[in-house]
Amino acid sequence: MSIPIRQGALFPSLEPPSPKLGKYLGTIKIKICVGTLFLSHFYREDAFEPLSGRTHIVGIKGKIESFKFDMHLRSKEKIIEVEEGKEVKGRDIILHEAEVDLKNLDFRGITARYVQENVFSSFSDESDSDGREFLLGKDEDFMVTYAEDEEWIGNL
Image (cartoon, rainbow, N blue to C red; front, side):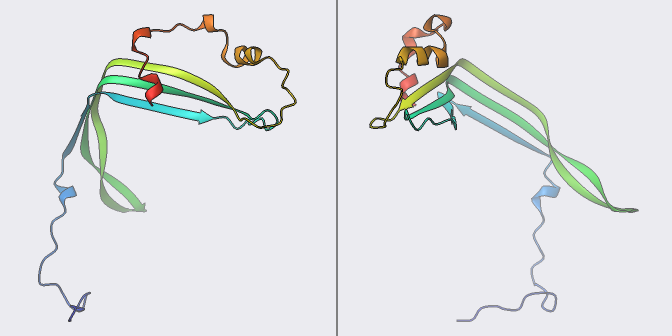
C-alpha cells in the first residue's frame, strides 16, 4: 500500500485549489415552517429544603399552531486595521431582514412544588394550603383561558 506523502511547498500540487464559495456568496435566505410547535423551559430553584424534602420548579410551556420563520442575511465587506497603516479586507454576514409569524400562541407560566416521601420533616403540622397560597397566590388571582384545550399541557 502506498500513500502519497508528497505535500507542502517543496511538492506543488498538480490541481489548483478550488475557489471558495464565500467570496461569491451575496445573500443567504433561511425559511422554517413548522405545523404545531411545543416549547417548554423550566428552572429548578436552588433553595432545596432538606428537612421537608421540598423543591420548587418554575417555568413556561407553550403551544404554537403554526410557526413560520423567514430570515435574509447579506454579506458585507469590511476593512480591518491590523497595524498602523496596514489593512486587511474581510467579510461579515449581517442580518438584513427577518420575519416571524406565530398563529394561535398559547403560553402559560407553571410553578410546581415536589415533596419527597420518606424524608423526616419537623414541619409536619404546617398547613399545606398555607404554603401553596404563599408560593402561588390564591386561585382566584389567576384567569384560565382556553379551558377546553388543556389536554396538551400535561403532554410535555
